[in-house]
Amino acid sequence: MNKAIEILSGKLSGWLEALTAMLPNMVVALFVLIVAYIAARMFRMAVGRLMRKFAAKEAITSLFAALVYLVALGVGLIVALNVLHLEQTVASLLAGAGIIGLALGFAFQDIAANFISGVLLAFRKPIQVGDIIETKSFIGMVEKIDLRVTMLRTFQGLHVIIPNRDVFQTPVTNYTKTSDRRIDMEVGVSYAEDLREVKKIAIDAVSELPYLLSGREVNLHYKEFGDSSINFILMIWVHYPDEPGFLKARSDAIIAVKEAFDKNGITIPFPIRTMDFGIKGGKTLTEMNFHTDTRKVMKNGQSKDSQEMTG
Image (cartoon, rainbow, N blue to C red; front, side, top):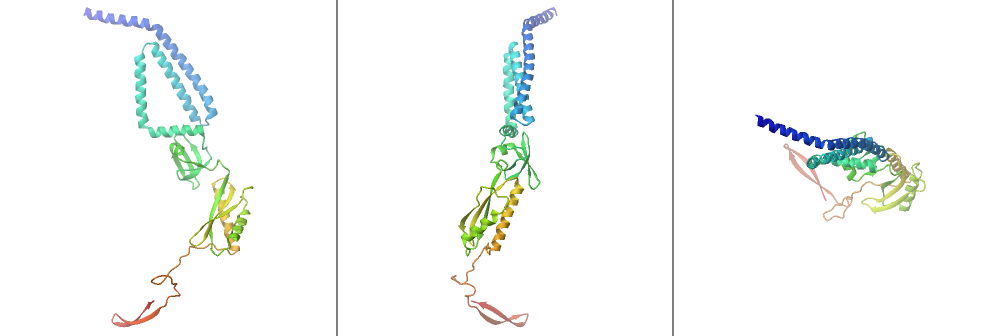
């Protein structure tokens, strides 16, 4: 019993001596932690002010400020542990953090990809709230850009939620970035029409529209000999306030061309199919010779006449 007490007493004395020897280091480590805490708060405030100049989203600003704050505290903790000669503990903490980070990266890679894409979208600003864009076969107005998703409102009134990774990695057409847009109308006229006269009438018809941009020439180019018409493309430039305005301008242009063609007797033909008769072909219906063959047939015990037409 006395021996056990001596061993315990020796252990306690050794720990007390070690604690006394480490007391200055503990004071220094505590001082390092206090300084790291104060510095982390100052860094967070400075980064917050700086980020507000580059990123309009408060969520991005808060995120980076928090990351800087945590990094500063982490550095202070590592320095404090080194002062206490706990290097192995530091190595173990870093290794554990690396393993946990790797596991979380694999488990939440899609969320991480959308999150990083949202951060990049906030900095690069290829699209903004209120822009009219087209991506992933959806077209509409941007209502919200979150850290994970971008929300569109289509012109049919539907809300579409698109992951930021898709917005960042796929082609995006931003109609708001440019105020001018060209309308391409494909039209066909009959082979019997005077093409030069058709060109003049079509250009004059759309030149009176109020949407046309000054300084932009109306162009008409014949495209091909179609099955039943000669096709051309009529190109006009209009101001693009929004998608409904563009659709109205295109609709009015189509009406103007149709009315001008009707007024001048220009035909926009329907698809034509030519029927060829005869065993070897090359004959029309009027060229075929028919004769009637009348025969007696029996039906329900009664005699009736039957007629067949043969060529």
